[in-house]
Image 1: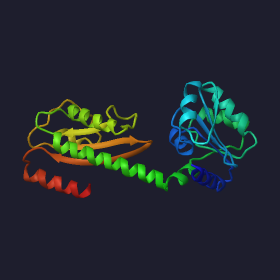
Image 2 (image 1 turned 90 degrees about the horizontal axis):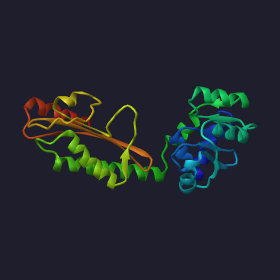
Image 3 (image 1 turned 180 degrees about the horizontal axis):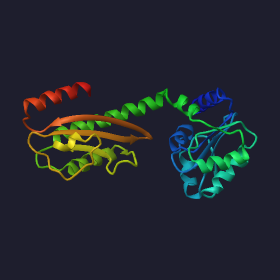
Image 4 (image 1 turned 30 degrees about the horizontal axis):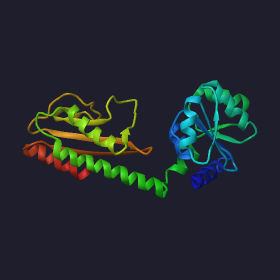
Amino acid sequence: MKQRRKNLLKYAQQIDCDTLVTFEPENLFYMTGFWGEAIGLLEKNGKTTIIAPELEVGRAKEESVDCNVITAERGEGLITSIIKKIKKNRVCTDCQNYSVMMSLKKSIPKIKSSTEPFYNARIIKDEKEIQILKKASKIIDEMFQICTKKMKIGQKESELQTILMTYAMEQEMFDTGYKSTLNPLIIAGGPNGALPHAQVTNRKFKKGDLVVTDLTLRYKGYVSDATRTFAIGKISSQSNKACEIVKESQ
């Protein structure tokens, strides 16, 4: 975590800033080890502070690494607390909320809105992150093996999803929480496979179906995503040709 913070400050200095403020949960997690509703502050001396509402404070103290945790009221209370701590600093923030940014600018006119320091620091993964991503990929490969054993004619897409998600959660792998989908996975049999982002339905698998299975899950804060296409029973030569082309790309 110490090296991550050094990298963040190095990239902040490249845009003439000495302090970073993060509102985005991914950046907060990278900087502190805590994922939740809070604001993260990294000062030029490396001191790291989390400002969180009361409901999040206990978990923030437990999960964060070498952080000072401060309690503040939700909304304006969080903003007021962060302003008090950074008034004299050259600040960069990843804040994407217009009204919040305007509130910050009133007290800190030269505050910069930029994701560059976070992006540049996070794009190269450290050894711990690499090991997490490798483990996540391994779990997803195991889930594809489950597909080969459990997928069958007459089974609903939703039933297979239940089997896969049960295994995923046993491995501490969870839904990403993306707002654009109602289902954690894409399991699309037959004609449903023509939809790039199909929703899981109660359609039953039929003989000759091609089933697109897209697993996108989060493990220890990191997302792993892979897609495979499975054939149920004997398929036509045309379908087989298409399937082989897809396999090459996957």
